[in-house]
Amino acid sequence: MCAPEEDYDRTLALLGDLSAYATFPGADLGFIDLIGGALAASLPALPPGYDPNAGPEYPGQE
Image (cartoon, rainbow, N blue to C red):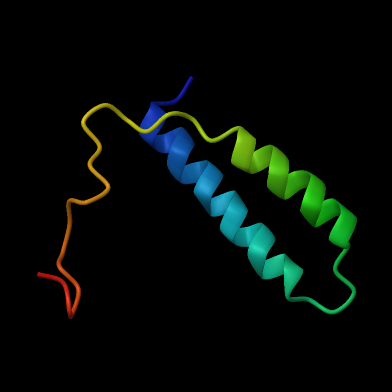
């Protein structure tokens, strides 16, 4: 079994790959809808101590 952070990262990577696949001509939209929903629903809870507001400030942020 892998650490929650690794599982979260792996699931996000799969969602990114699915998004890239969606841009291909002839991509199966039914597959994308089904798998995208399943992957999103399977996202684990964020790791303990994770702060989505932590990180670099972007231009225009104060």
